[in-house]
Image (cartoon, rainbow, N blue to C red):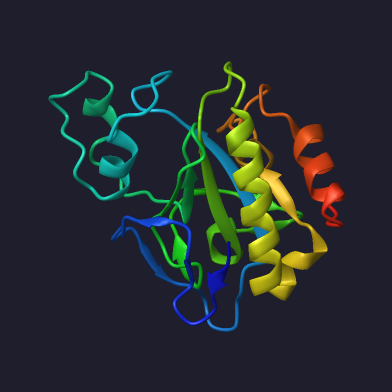
Length: 189
């Protein structure tokens, strides 16, 4: 798995372009990986609804929950589905709209300097083994493509937006991710 440095696209990802992105501030490159959890409707997996949300095509008539979120303009760079499928919505050199109001180590506006990775899941359901394996591969590829990520800065959405967000949730196995990265010689900050 690798990232094309010119296009900012993963060679192994299904491309599903989102309009919900823009240019990063001048001179800013990715320095942080933010891990999220998402399921639509909440607690349900495998449908087309995450793609629809990130491409502004979510039909509010399909599910009552969608009535409250269909107008949101959000995205993420990547999604790792429960079976390990990798989907890319935004090229990595662009700013995806995934973090919202956020702060990491005193630095506000995390969208400016981060890469957002969604995992299909919820706070109260363990993530699948395939997701951890693909996440490990993705992080390794990102660290190769973006030297500023080599320092190992990885945070959950809940870490950068405490009190507002809870994902990836208590069922996300941080020690498992750290062990996978360590086995490949990577560190996590």
